[in-house]
Length: 297
Length: 281
Image 1 (tube, rainbow over the protein chains, first blue to last red):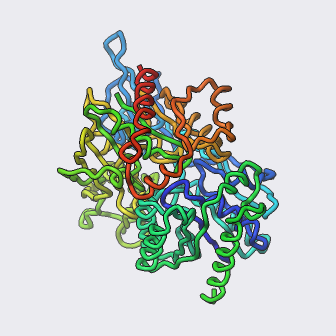
Image 2: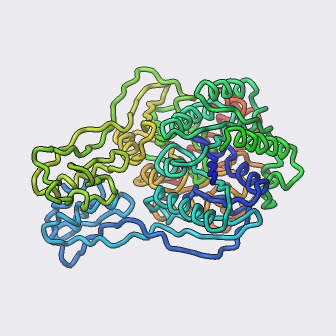
Image 3: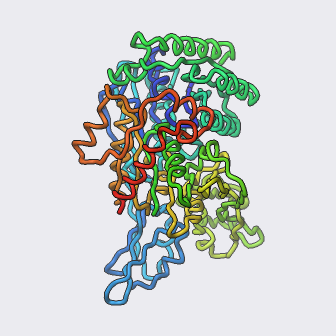
């Protein structure tokens, strides 16, 4: 089974537009949207949700106010600055835990001298299995300002793999998140290859270098395509040179095309419209297929 | 005053807004690049007089002479909520990529067989350009504790100076780490269905954090008014609209701030800053 992950380092380079087109072009893929805190693939593929599951991950500390005697020991226990001391008119302080700062490590819970801290399970969002016109899709929604996006990404990928095995699909297409941090690492570890969609700007180049380093770090073969390449042909050449020098392959170029926004508005993949750049994306998909065959995997 | 420039969707123009606002401020201003996974502000603002410091977490290390793992003790591994300690061999193994540096295992070990060592995960660099003091955080490749580096960047904020924070994209912990405790948030979006969807998520996040905010529409096109309609329905103030101008894109590509290349836009960013200050007050 192949698992191809589309990532970018820099956000907004066109990952989801490219992935949605691949989804339509591929034969019988399973789709996974791993951009769990700003998912967009569903806007194009209009999934019919079949299953919904709560995503329970880790714990969160809560002060049990009727037991707490405001000794303040937790202040020194917490390394994440999550304990808030609120002075009260009585002169004593009220202690609370800021859920947005709490890492869920359990140190305050375990070592509070009065056992005045609870540690319930944390609901961090939900994940779903859906049907789309391109194939089954696993996607998720991280809770508002919630933790554990990396674990939610891992859950989405595991479910996509389970679906693929159960129903004999031999390709999983993954829409990855921007950045180089924990959800990106969770999206790419163990994948067959990553496709980096970048743009011909200094930011695109800088972020590409970091994301290719990350792929190298996890020993995942990488290839690159430059979106909106005609905005700066010189920068495109520079980026392609950088790609080769870092041991990744250049897959192709996609022209700047306002048809991409039009396709989005119509909830269509670019290759389902007559946008000129659809040709570029089809060519990249064919090159990708060819490359996969040639590597003999 | 702390102003965070944020967005759900990546690539909407956060860095462009942050850089040009800082340049438009005229007076002394702090610009803080909190997108520590992919920092880009330095591509536009070439600071001098660089100072750099390392951000580290405390990683546990087993003192083997004291550890009783061989006698079936695995209290450290049991304690760890992050699966960063595996008790399989003779001594526990520490998985640095999983460790959050909470110090719980050290406290949980009854034999005092764990000490902590400093483990670098990134850097915070401060430099100077014109009226701007630029602080940039950068996470080492392969690391995942962005929030700790963002906190390191925010430690550089001085009271009584205007601070503009370029936040990471998304609505997960790194975006929250940048946004929380800000006085005001500017949510930058673009008039596309993806832009609108991710703006709604960013609005939910910003409201949950109790930070007041307004919206900037980048690459605005009169034909696409989905953001204007949404903001009207939600009673959200649109602070500025930056037109879809190819010249802006071309200068962005080569790392030139808009108001240095296209002075006609200076007024737009000055007006935006004035509106932010008014809305935040």
